[in-house]
Amino acid sequence: MTTSLTWRLKRYGRFVPSSRETGGKPWKVFEALGDKPVIVLTIVESGYLLILQGQESLGESRMVRMQFDGRGRTEAIDECSSAVAKLMEYVPVTTQDDVPLHPNQPPTEGPAPATQHTCQGKAVGVEPEVVQGSLSIKRLTQHFLGEAALTLPKMYHRSSLAQGDLESILRVCMLDPTFYAFVENMEGELKKLLEE
Image (tube, rainbow, N blue to C red; front, side, top):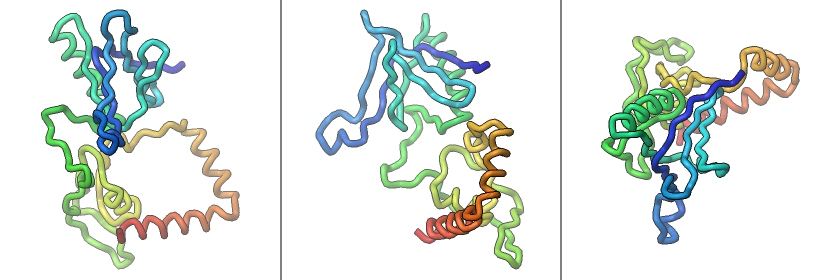
């Protein structure tokens, strides 16, 4: 049985990337006012995020803003806090008080942690760097190729596949004669990403 967590929103905004080019507003805002249906944020057990106003889905953006509803300010803050705690398991969460990144600045680039290298060039971490928030593609690539010792944020530890499903998929892949070439090609592409 799938379980879900639900919160009521007073206001929801989604970022519209092309709006600056067309001279429009960068945020499309939805409000639960008057005769409009309530806005509901739902996170289902598998990690899917649903934002609905009545029967209409509002969640079509990678960057969103939410204002939580409650009988009073204290209840709205409590609702917000519980939603943020759950959302942080899946995605990076910031507040309006946080300093936003410049649009062209990659997230969490930072210096690589101190590592020792074996003769094969693989990283043997002295202490893996604990990363908070989002990571750049370069940092993720370094981690997956074993060139950087990182402890990834919680959101990177989730999988939408059940353990049994993953095993079945892996068995099918291992029986496919082209799978090994695919893995080698994937490793080559990851190395190209590091050079960018």
